[in-house]
Image 1: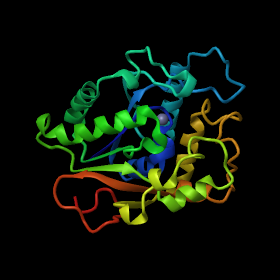
Image 2: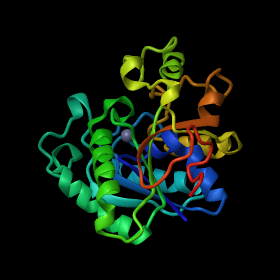
Image 3: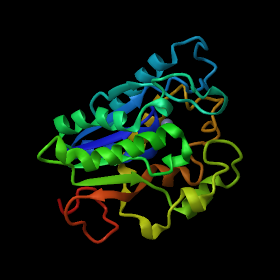
Length: 267
Ligand SMILES: [Zn+2]
C-alpha cells in the first residue's frame, strides 16, 4: 500500500503533513514524497549558514534529513525551480514553476503514479496553504494527475486529500502574529469550516518526528524566520504538531461518512 505526497518545496511536507507521513510510515505503508523543486529561492534564515551557499543543494540535503526524521524513503525531485515570491520572483526562469506549463507539470507526475501506484495521494489545498504560486501550481497538477491516472495505470489512486485548516484554527494561529506567511491572510478564504473536513488525524504520537523534520529544514526555521518565536511550549504548537486535517480532493469509489480518522478507511 502506497501513500504519495506531492509538494513544491523542501519543508512543505514537514509543516503540512509531517505527522501523517510519519504515522503511515510507522504503520508499514510505503510513503513516498515528490518535491517539485529544491526551494532554491528560499531565504537563509540562520546566520550560522554561509550566505553564499548553494541554496538548492542545502535544501535538498535538509529535505533528505527531514525524510529520515519522518521514517520515509528518499524524496523524488522533479527538478523544477522555486519561483520565489515578491522581489525574488523568478519571472525569467523557464524552469520556475510559475513559468512551467501546467500540463507539462501534470505529465511529469504521471510516470511516478504509474510506477508507485499509490492508493492515496496528498497535496496542497486549492489556495496553496498561503497562496504561494508554486503550491497552487503543484496542487493543480497533482489534482489533474489524480484524475488522469487511469490512463497510465490499471490501479489509479482511490483518494486524493488536500491539507486544510479550519478558519477557527487559522484565527488562533494568527493571534499576536504580525509576520510569517499566514499573518495577513483572510481566514474565511484560506481556512475551511470544520464541516468541510474529510479526515481528521491524530498524529500526536508522531509529534516529535514532525518537529524533528521541521527543524531539519534549518535554513528555513532559523533565528531570522517567522518560525523562530515559536517555543516548544507555546500554546497551539502542540495542537499544530498533534493534529492534521484534510479535505477531500477526489475519490474513486465509496467514501465513508466523514470525517474519517484514517486516510485509508474502508479501502
Ligand atoms: Zn512551499
